[in-house]
Length: 191
Image (cartoon, rainbow, N blue to C red; front, side, top):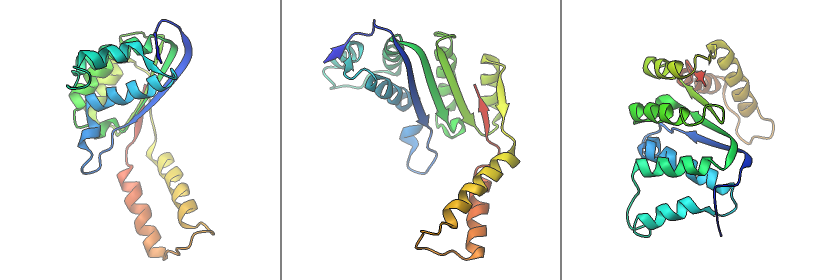
């Protein structure tokens, strides 16, 4: 059952992770970001939004792929149904289309400043920091030592779990901790 987007609902939330692992480049694009957000926000309806059905029909009943522009227009129409929209973009620095995603963020945040709430995490990359700082001067740099302590606690809980059937040597635990802590270096949050 399709629903129209005219009725306002309270809040909607979506999360997207730019997975930088090898072989995951397809999940690091603007198109995959927008598709994921459409899917997540549409799920809140309990049915398919009318605007999404129209997009499907405009693409020859799913025979062709919609453009990024038509996906974006569809997303914004879906978001109109909510009083508040929260989007979390995780690991922005891992995006394979960084310039396009930063442009998308600028376009999307100009849509409804009071309605849209965006949180993005990234390592402190100059281009990302400059672009996002120009949108909203509020940003939080997460101090590396605080992040490292939290990660180390989490790792300790996993590796020293009494219920675990694996027992790790102290050397192996130290190697695991060092590898994870090095890869998490320099995270910051921008919103």
